[in-house]
Length: 143
Image 1 (cartoon, rainbow, N blue to C red):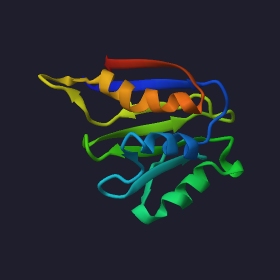
Image 2 (cartoon, one colour):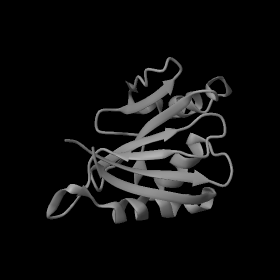
Image 3 (tube, one colour):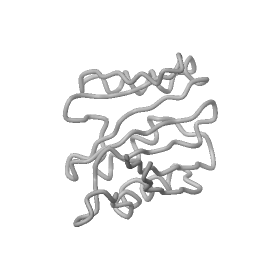
């Protein structure tokens, strides 16, 4: 049995990965995880995540937002160093209006298996309103 928590975000207009990451930096999020930066361009249907050094953030954002990659799912990992939690931001094809955020850690105190979705909503959803966020759906599921 495994647990999956995700927040599907729908934007009123197309967004770039860079714009979403910039909006989240004010809430303490960063591309810089403890071991570097992780990203993905799904140009081979393998969803192969890659990592690089923290000084490559600008290059990673340029690559995932490149017109050459508009026909592929792309993703970056984000990390909140104060909360010591992170997740994946996955962006769908072409219009880039439905990123999905999957948590990697961050549980409700006293109920370790449950994700503290209220914290994630405050830390992710609220800062994205200025980027045109139109709706979201949060789920914490046992698979």
